[in-house]
Amino acid sequence: MSSDDILKKAEEYIPATVRMISGCRDEQTSADVSNVGSFKLPDPAGRAGGACTSALLSVVYEDHKTPEDVLSFQEVLLKMRLILASRNYSQIPQLTSSRPLDISEPFVLVPPENEAGTRRAVVIAINYVGQQGELSGCHNDGYNMIEYIKNVHGFPEENITILMDDGKQTPPTKANILAAYRQIVEDSQEGDVVFCHYSGHGGKLRDDDGDEEDGFDETLVPVDYDTKGQIRDDDLFKTLVGPMARGVVMTCLMDCCHSGTVLDLPYRFVADGEQEEMTVPEDFKMQALMGLFQALQSNPQVMQTCGECHIL
Image (cartoon, rainbow, N blue to C red):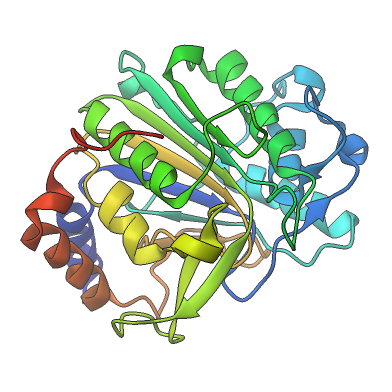
């Protein structure tokens, strides 16, 4: 398939411009950092943070300040990789996208052509309080990221939906996570900007429809996963990625294990020091993306905006 054909299909199957920064490739695990002090983070919430979020913020928001020099997407990810490597983490950050993004472009959440649009965000942070596998850094991640998008990128506080298992915010159950994603899709229109941050556990489940090269679906793990199950990458596409309106620019940061392709985006840049531009990986299955798109089209309830979905 030619590059023009790939782009044409990507624009058909994913109307919005979607970019995702992930903490690691699918086969890698993320890390929970017990001391963000070494990352020189603004830390309004405590003393722990996820490795990916901490590394990103130490590059773009160190000491509550943006860098004097304008950094490109490539520079941001490579700097993240250096920080992670300096702390003995093997994670390799990567950027995936629905369009062939020029990685030498400035790292921005709000492109100039979307400056006038409304800015909305969903921030999900799960520590799994009192459960086996409890984390200590995810609430930290969420509050640090909220401060960054408000102060640097102008996201209004009233447009930021927060899900945390801290007893104060909306609980990050499976139903509430999917409802928050459906709601932001319903609210967003051409010219708007969306930011989604997830900090928590990620997982893998046996692929149930044959669309994964490795035989596994990547997942997000809600706080009630033991009774309600995990959120598969196919669900994320059908709920958040596929239905998002054309002309919306959405950036997602997924700070969890096995997160490399959790949004099923065709273009990829891996910050391993070897890749110089975004490419479509040889193992990317456009047929699988078409299958997700067709499933979305054939299910009016999925395509419907979330008028009947309410966060509990």
